[in-house]
Image (cartoon, rainbow, N blue to C red):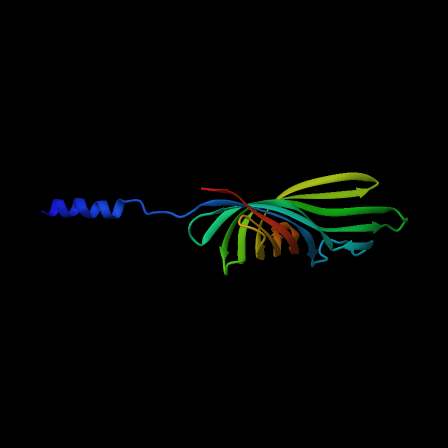
Length: 189
């Protein structure tokens, strides 16, 4: 008798639950970033720092049938650049750019408002153009935090506005970004 009940109970707990719809969603974004620090800028040279710079990103998110979503994000960000003039009048330029490769998690707060957080790697690229060109690459860990509002255009597309904080550990401070984004649900199953 116990065997009959245990077989019946086992069938109830091992049956696969029904699942909803899954999808892949692409976020293609572009906008401006602001680097808030002056660290790394030499004080003894005449410098002209550019703190506003273009930021682009592409994020592919997997939307399962529950609240937490995950995906990958990459793109291109210029943290800062500055022009220098030495005491002899020689001119040069330095810029710090990065390509982030981040694992991102997301959750919907309301139907159109989402928050994102993630961590991963930044491939930093420092370029110096002063008498000669020198390029230096470095790997840095870092993270991202973002919030976006998406206005639906149709069943599978939308336009959004996103505020984002990109931070690479080697930069001392991160870049605060505002981006316009196109959102496309390109695959459903």
